Image (cartoon, rainbow, N blue to C red; front, side, top):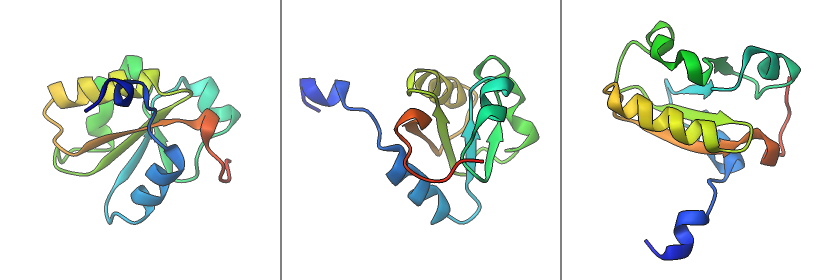
Length: 105
């Protein structure tokens, strides 16, 4: 990994495509409930970062693929780290919805 790779943000558009092409995957929005109500990616589940320990309600199996996003990528990065500490083994930070070009609901 080069120095500049550290600053490269995940591509949320590619991440959503990967989520849709992964059977059984879960798309997690870790923004606040209010942010989620204001617009979210269809098919996502809202588990705010501050309540990430409740993820077992939607992802009991720790091998299930989880794709995580927030507004700009910071909270999703933190959530991915916490999920890994909780034993989840297949977690991907796909970045922030601010860069998303698809439909929101």
